[in-house]
Amino acid sequence: MTRSPHHRYLWVAAAATIMLASCGDSVDVDASAAGDTTTSPPTSTTTTAVIPPVAAPESFHPGGTAWELVWSDEFDGAELDESKWGWEQNCWGGGNQELQCYTNRAENTYLSDGMLHIRAVQEDFTGLDGSADWENADELGTATLPYTSGRIRSKDKGDWRYGRFEVRAKLPFGQGLWPAIWMLPTDSKYGGWAASGEIDIMEAINLKTVFTPDNNAVHGTLHFGAEWPSNVNSGTFVQLFDEHPSDAFRVYAIEWEEGEIRWFVDDMHYATQTADGWYSQITTEGGTTEVIEGSAPFDQRFHLLLNVAVGGTWPGPPDDATVFPQEMVVDYVRVYECGVSPSDGKGCATSEPSATLVAGKQPAEPTEILFTGPFAGEFDPATLGNTLTIFTDDQIFPWKWDSFNATGSLAFELIDTEDSDHGTVIQTTFNTNEAVVYFQAPVTYDLSDWADGFVEFDLRVVDLGATGRGFTMKVDCVHPCSSGDFSIGDPAVDEWIHHKVPIADLLGHSGSSLDLSLVDTPLVIFPAWGNQEGVVMQVDNVEWTR
Image 1 (cartoon, helix red, strand yellow):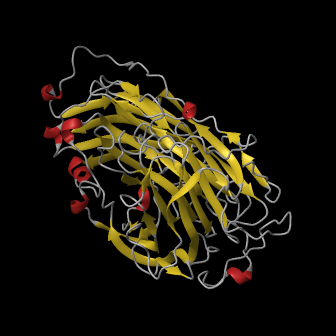
Image 2 (tube, one colour):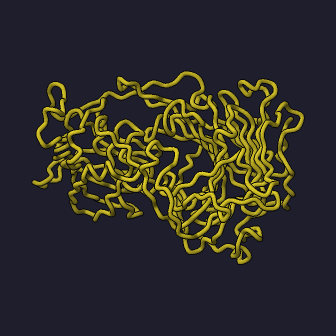
Image 3 (spheres, one colour):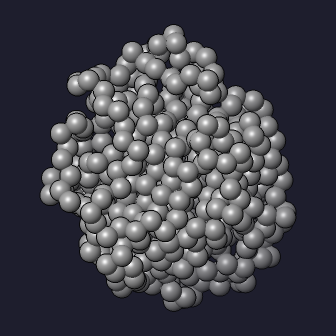
């Protein structure tokens, strides 16, 4: 069936990178929205109506096609159906420095009048500082955050490979609000995030704040590639100019078949990505990288997630104009199978030729490990004394200064400081908001004897850019094995600061999985993720001592 866009006016940003930094001042919302959004729908003077509103139909399931309903939740009961959904409960910030604790309380997730309400509340709460799914969950401590919210998932209760996934929802609004309808792999066959993929059916941030492409749009995105930090993402967004997604229910959907995923808002197909623009890359035991053949990682079972995050590196924190509580209200979730060919999902597409074809990303070509410093023979940490030198005036074998950047670019150079205490240093300029820099070897080394030692380095920030945010360091042991992000605070500008971090603190850090017998990356360092543009930093005298 051909879909007519006669009552929807949409603007699509082709192949846009989703992590765009928002800027400018927030605008006042309509005074009628200042109350509790559980009793009256939020409204705003910022919505631009280009045609009279059209009542949303009950469903945009394409009639006359071979899509067959196989799973649904209409939320007509008194309580959430636990045969279909489970709650996530934690206060770890989702890896994005989010500010909410997810709970299973009725204050954050409840059913009313045939609708699911996922509610973000401004209140202090204490919970697990990490995910209950982690292998070391029993060893995790607690954290206290200033907001609560809900996050539910269908994992092991609703898991699918291919199909059409529809969610009819009305979204929260305000600076710092980040609702999401998305999918994660159930089995993570190709490794940790994001080597096994992530499908974002809908994300939105900062709705009804200052008008920017990010703040008045919904996004459809894929995350893939290798394990973090070598993952990438690609997608696009669509502006909604008639019925604002915080004022009206809209239907957010994808159609997923082997080698292709299509995004929809209501009856408008606005974007497509194909396997030509995604991949899954693994690292072998020999240290080489290989790309999985076929349409990996989007050829395995995925499950659904619904949540409202508060803050984080993409939207930034709430401000004084943000009204709480805020809710994502969900009318239904429906999953369809392609009756023509359930095994690959092909033969049921409801596509429009005008939809944006997102180019996606290609795996980087393997690069040769190059060293500019002197070295000879094999590196054997057992022969070291009490100092393992990683950088001083030059890179020292086998450690190479390298980087990962999800967007934008980095510039490296060796700088002669004409300072007798520092001499030649590595200077890095961040023309991105999403990057980490590190020293790494092509293989792992057993540094277990250094458990009582220290990671030492000198850091000088030449320019903090526009954000002035803090810096983070860590040690990795073949991702996702890591100490986790360890804060080194807000450094002064134009001043050398010597950092001496006890390795015992990294081993005991909340969420740490650091294994000293498998160290390949003895130092990772970066400004706060999402707030790096314009930062210039210098690093020198990097070593492990004991």
